[in-house]
Amino acid sequence: MNHACYSLPLKPGRVIQRKKLAKCSLEESIRDHIHLMITSHFRENKYDQTFGNSIWEYEFSNMLKDHNIREDIKRSVLRCITRHEPRLEDLRIDIRWLQEEVADRKIKRLNKLLDINISGIVTVNKKPFTHNEQCYIAPLSYK
Image (cartoon, rainbow, N blue to C red; front, side):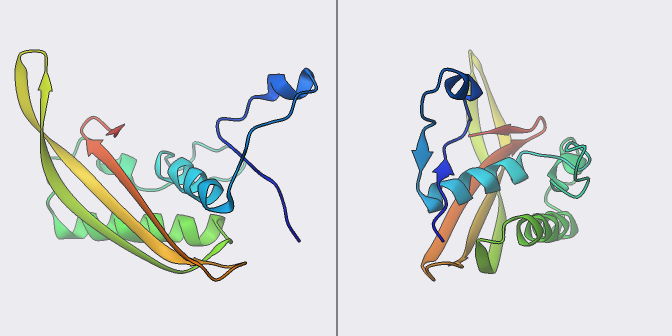
């Protein structure tokens, strides 16, 4: 059974105007959904309190190099993707802390960068799947 995958963000105004919505590939749809899961915090979705992850809980933490925090985030992201993305199987997640120099006008500062690598197998066609997300912590922002 082949279902259409639609690009994010959805533009419901196009439906009202009887125009077609932009479509995307299955892999792009999965990537968009994973991005939505990673950028969501717990209890943000009023219909499903489990949607999201624990990255937000550590956004302003001073102990970002702590191995326990990294493992908690890894488990949280894995749990969310396993629960909410049935199009993937054999999931593996690798999380690393990086530091990146950011120039903001005349000020240079080091930002902590969370590098999330996700790999698995697409369930319907058994093709390998990889995805990378990077986000700055404190305050949380995305590349």
